Length: 112
Image (cartoon, rainbow, N blue to C red; front, side, top):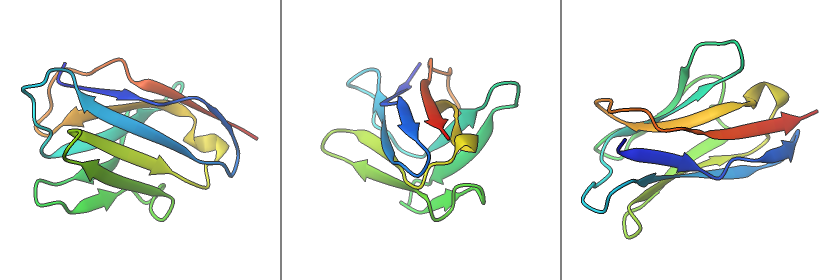
């Protein structure tokens, strides 16, 4: 596993949460990567892609509410999630592009 997501928790609808994605070893530099999520009983879906040139692409479901940012000094990528909805409830993952092994993910629960 190269990248591991953290920072999940329980938040009320309309609230915010920030997830972090960090490398599991110090010799891994995060380049292109993607955020994914998997809701109960559903397939894993991609929510955002951070390209190697710094461009970010969002799925229609999260566009305008989620923001990806990078802290190069900390070798960490963040997913700022605002205006959260109950349908955002899922286990969130981050992974490299191309993909490597999946980490455990972090659970985000949005209550109505």
